[in-house]
Length: 338
Length: 272
Image (cartoon, rainbow over all chains, first blue to last red; front, side):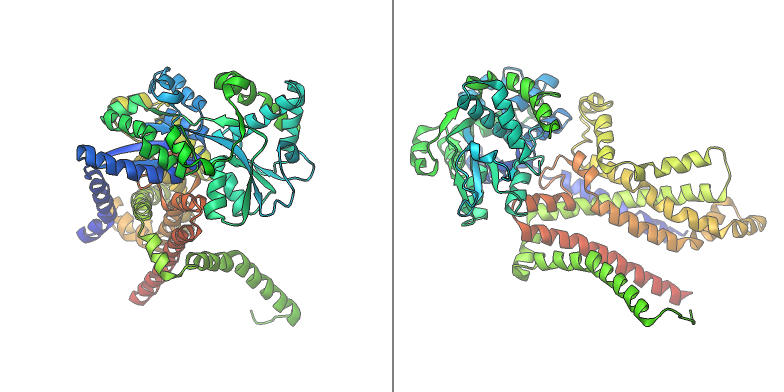
């Protein structure tokens, strides 16, 4: 082999190295927001608004990178070393897991921001095909034989856990807190589920694009996104008589942010979620804003519905997780009987 | 084959089955990808491909392949040379080890690296202390790609080398050539087609790998997404056209490597 052919043989390595170094040479503040599945559109709009605001305030360019997936899966990735500056997950328990298994986040994280660190709320609704051919009005209609229900897997998806708990809460109310009846009801519900996707977005795709199922149990924001934009005119939203108040939580990942030197901008990023601008962006993406003036402005967009909280019915996430979703918990028992 | 004794009808039937199978499983899906990618016209097609995240994903995929393929090429040539031309203890064990990545599911391949380099893993705390980022970053994507494509070149070369036997090498050595010279001037030219084919297969797998890469990439848009991951993200965001446009790039890459292969083949045949 002569010199020339050795050079040509090494060329790919040299090009590769050049690519890597050029990527590392960019100079600006970057944040990584590790989020759950249906927030893609929300944070796309929010990041842009925040970056403009931050540039005006401080003169620094900030770029926010996004990672999306099932909430439980995303928490796992952060635990395994995905260096998030902030996490914006579907439920407090997933952030608790990060706090418990690593020392990246203090255990008291939930008290650091207003409203228990949940800047916007949502709930669980039904999405049906146009004209509601199966005549689905409430939770009872979902357990009827032959109705095909689409929802994700509670083991990996935050939204799915809210779905499950909403159904459980409804059954408890209907049968005066009879846990066995509730268990039968939820078991019957899961018997009607033909596909369990790992995240909320996967379930929506199954229902909307692959056209499987009669009803999708989904985040309110996800259902509206489909009904008003991506699948306009093809779907209808059905509000059940009772649902759960879902509080997706956000927090700073202290360990990673300090290592990156981004604590200040990451903190400002989360606080911006509570600002009027941030709340408005949330409302535009069909998340229920906390700020009353913004809620009033978008009131027509959110149907009134009776909501219970996880603390009222399940004594908080820790208890609910241990009882229902832990290994050999009630969900495992229900799903095995199938 | 001169004496075809089968009735015409059976001949046509078999040809029909082969063509139908080929059309259904290869041509139709390929056509479908391009049809969907161009559903909204060429303008939109090129626009979606100029998206910042799409370009970053392409860059990531190309860099990954540019690093993984040459490394596996060096390893594959050296290992298959040792295995095919020499006898030593533990040869079968080495062969089995080389095959390991083929028998392991890609998801497990990804998890192995999380267990090794993840924050809770074996080397995680040390890596964090020294501020070295491997998992959920480019190095992990390259590492798992090397892992899953590890056996491809060697597997391609071992049978070729074995079938050629040792005579030419022995002749070279008898005439006084050094081992190095024998390798470059005798062994390598004999297996150049195998090498080329190995590179093509290895490259295709490196660029197309989804499962293992998905586990270790962290799915950060514009940073650690490869093209296959980018396709999934776009599809999940209801951007079917963009998703198929990105998929069509993957398909084009595959077609181009095949064309490149044929061109080189023709050129070499003329040169000889």
